Length: 313
Image (cartoon, rainbow, N blue to C red; front, side, top):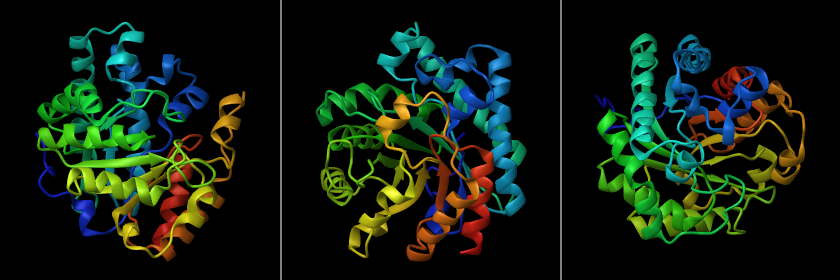
């Protein structure tokens, strides 16, 4: 059963951690085979499910030890129709995997939640295409239709909210927001940005946020930035009004571009302490940003250092 759907505690302030780069962690550190980068595929058996549980436990312990909130983000970035078909899932099997992902997080919340560490369950929706490349851009109506079933399953399964991770373009983001609104779900849009701080479409971040807000009646609870190093976008963040809509960061460990990361044969984990300091510097400039996690190349070590640096900031 949803606990925070009608009032997300992260909107009241205070630090909220979330997890790191789940796919890169599972592949490079855990030795897991994730076809098409699909972490949800591990839910197919108990051994894989336990790998996911252990992953989330490592991150939740950091939040509990530091008395921050925690957002449990489901391992469902790839569990949408096109990706499910590539992996051999029927629509019904995909629904079951999405429900199972949320149920696993509900069990983890029961284990880890304290008054100082509220645990919010978020159903993760990924892009129809690649998280680095917008590919063939859908209309908002097409995007709502494509993502609507997953949003409905998350609502029925008891998720508190929906987060669109690695959104690459405005029309798809609008469609996801409308799909969540149709189910009465709070929704967050987390945009991928390139080394110039712009979306993969070339659109400025401020413009993208403004257009999604305009098309949805300020539908998202807030926005996030993901899949980029802080050095890639720090320069485009200023004191304009739109910056108040930005409340979360899930940054890459590496300073490399997406093209360079795609070609790399080894994981670039960067420097966890340095990344934490970068987050701390951003929070000193924008103290309203309070949802903090990682993306490609990050793991629980980075989350630990981000937490330490941001609590100090």
